[in-house]
Length: 226
Image 1 (cartoon, rainbow, N blue to C red):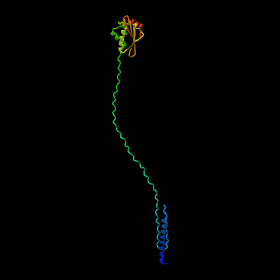
Image 2 (cartoon, one colour):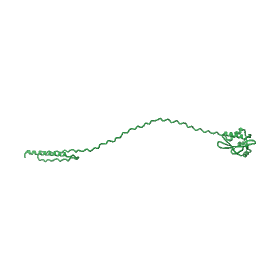
Image 3 (tube, rainbow, N blue to C red):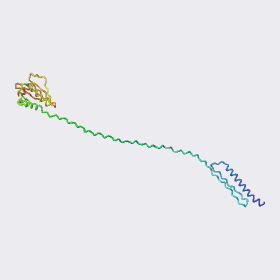
Image 4 (spheres, one colour):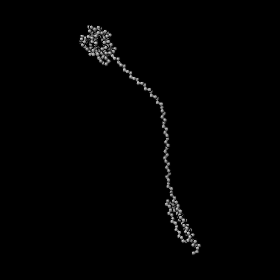
């Protein structure tokens, strides 16, 4: 075999390999791109048919897988919080309070008038008797007096006026005839105590007797005789 033919044979093989490689690349490029990386082709092993150095096969460049971007959800803006309005607190106007009126001094209760100490009815009769110059009757008994006055009604009137002037109440008892020459009067003191004033006309004048009990004519005559 001529030497030229021997040299041309390897060149043809290399050219055929290049064509085959281009064809494979075209097929790979025409395939749809998937999420899985393409299977890398095994390199073609060349058979050393001559002493010429074997040209290494061109490695297939792997195309990076194109990842489909995930659909991103639109970002939801945070809810807008309305700004709080400052509520202006109403200013409390401090009003000057009127001063309370000064308390009036409480009027102290007026002291009740102390009633005057009244003389006993016996003393009233004794004072009258002394003024009228009466004589003790019934044997010097201080509750028994005697006047020369024969008009016992006149004596009764004067005694009644003196007793009433000292705040004693005097009332004449009914049921006795004036012709009998005898009269009885009830004398009531302020404390309610009763005393009886007896007047009796005698032949010696008028006799008047003061006693806590009401006496009869007979009792009066007995007292004067004792």
